[in-house]
Amino acid sequence: MIRINASIGIDEREIEESFVRASGPGGQNVNKLSTAVQLRFDVRNSPSLPPEVRERLEHLAGRRLTRDGVLIIIAQRHRTQARNRQDALDRLIDLARKAAVAPQPRRATKPTRASRERRVETKKRRSGVKRLRRVKPVFD
Image (cartoon, rainbow, N blue to C red; front, side, top):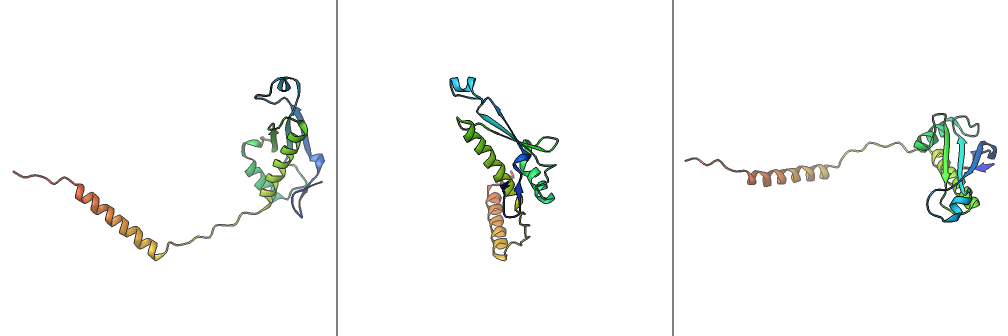
């Protein structure tokens, strides 16, 4: 069981990992070893996640989420399979922890009287500068 917070945990059997060849520089290692990790987690059908957390996680996942609701995380920063595997798992846990916290609703506020007065004063000053730049008509 992978702990997300005190009340949420993800069963390790829900996570599917496959190892693929990493792209980019790396010499002969890149051509011989499959060090990159492709982690798959079915967000939509996970019994471990409460509905509101599932919804927020789908929103946070963005383009990493497939049409079927599967979250795909590809980790290839490190040279070893073990480190890439841990990196992918850490990224999944971090994303799930962010989704587990409900966002604070925005409280509407009014601008202060002083800030409104400053704004109006600035506008007056600016219009005065523009008024002085106008070309006055010349009469013969």
